[in-house]
Image 1 (tube, rainbow, N blue to C red):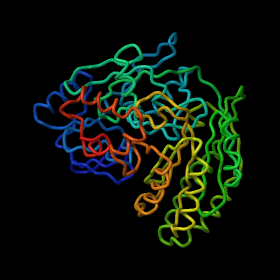
Image 2: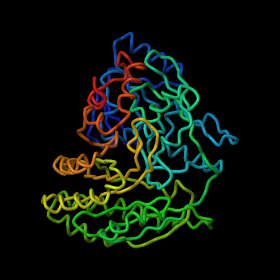
Image 3: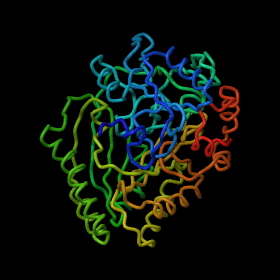
Length: 439
């Protein structure tokens, strides 16, 4: 199975395996004109339209029983503008291809998430992010985008052109149209020194504000049932380059992070009572390491163990309290959690439905292995997150609806009004959008 989610006999499935859909037909347009024609034809046939990326969302945000638009042929770099320091890329381009192509040109994005299998439009439309004190999500690095709307017309959006669409469409959830190209701000490629080291949970929480303030990119993983975390600090470096040696990299990133971790998950599934003991061992197996490399080789790593995930953004000031409540809940509940909890941050941005819109944020992500019952854990975690006015990641499991979002997003009505204007007949509607944006 490729990284692009797929299925047999006309069924589309996502990467996490928790969403399936049977579209009436699939279209793989080779140009913007072909895409416009496909949208107009869908309207004539009374069918809804959804564009999919690589299926890395855990929600049914891309599911449709109408026309499924696949992006494979809308890939590649259209233009690099070294004066403006931007790159314009077709919407179906995987982040991995973009990162590698930019590196060859001596360029890089400023910040990115921790995997790069997704398409650029799928990643930005759902608000994918990494961690950063000053630098924000991938969508916040967008300088312009091209959008095909419900009537098949092509809109160019930027701060100067259609600015009200630009404010919303950078994280548009697929609700405003189909993104066909994105222009990102880039910079000359630089080096990051990564410092990974274990640290007690209580110390990380006590020093959280300092760790955030002293590092350009700080994140940590806490292992439930233990008092242990693994911290990661990435900061710009003058060099020299000192990548992780190949064998060591394979051992730590593939064998330990994916191979041994997978075996630990299997054991945990077969014997849940063993999970706390496994957690103690695996959280102690991590040793400190430091290396220096170009950004995408530091920010991203392979994730081969399939899982289901929920992630909420809470105000950064509420992060420590939220984590304490989460730990107490797990200890009290008798739950057996074999997957680390991931904690990252982002500065406030100005995108209408960005999880960091208008507020400095901390992201707390809970995971369960694909195929294990996650409802009890996620429901209890979600109760804690929403008590802190948390905003769920648009592409990860949550149960919130439009009524809730209208309370936690001050500009929610601005987005729905724009949707009424651009897609009055709800050509891009599906069950998920009906729930999160209202009918």
